[in-house]
Amino acid sequence: MCAAPIGLLDSGVGGLSVWREVIRLLPDYPTVYVSDNAFCPYGPRPAEEVIQRTKKISRFLIDKGCEMIVVACNTASAAAIDVLRQTFEIPFVGIEPAVKPAANLSKSGVVGVLATQGTFKGRLYLETSKRYAAHVQIIEQVGDGLVELVEQGLTEAPRTMELLHQYIDPMIDAGADHLVLGCTHYPFLIPAIQKIAQGRIVIDDPAPAVALQVFALLSRKDMTPSQPTDPLYRFYATGTHNSIQALYGRMAVRDMASAQFFSHLNLT
Ligand code: DGL
Image 1 (cartoon, protein in one colour):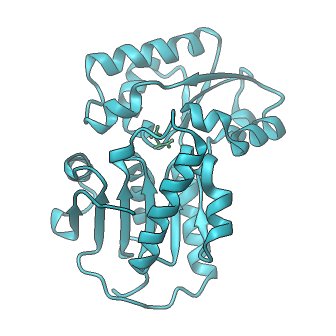
Image 2: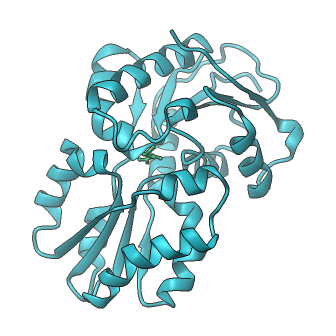
């Protein structure tokens, strides 16, 4: 296998929810993933800081031979996707909350959106919800604390369930029949959310649509072979690699030998 690797970035392990959809469609494609967990969470940080971090990571991924980068983070896409596209010549694929399909499919006319502060403030979300979801009532909820719990692997811990109840119960009480996951960490909370929602809400995760977009771009663009990669998947963390390695193991989509993990990536 010697195609140019696909680069992915996130503030932490959340982008793995996008990565697993990408490799589902492109199982033998090499990937290089950067978890910026030394700076996690991105949500409360000023947009300018997120732009600087994602620029540095993108430069690193391009140096590693990536010819396409997936910004597998809603917050980073909201803050930085325009700048990244202007700064670098390779294609960038971003992610935004799936408000449009949720609004179109909602029967009750009430849609809940769980996302970070940075994502709610971004142009992508504001424009999409104004253009495609003006006919429904949107209940916005910042998921404070959830990213940190997912980073620790605490996807069904008492504190996680408590926060999810606090965020989701009022949406259900208000009649929401769709819940848009506006942060790539949240798909790892789907089993916990399902326990709370008891079938009363449809969960919308845009990750499969992002993977389709990657697939379509690769098919259109001639991604010529550049450097052979072994192992197939490389994961870099700016902090320690423990959380990403643990989640990779738990997902069990590929064997451990397909992946290599690096800690304390120093981006200057
Ligand atoms: N996975 C990121 C997102 O989709 C997490 C945000 C954060 O680090 O706060 O927004």
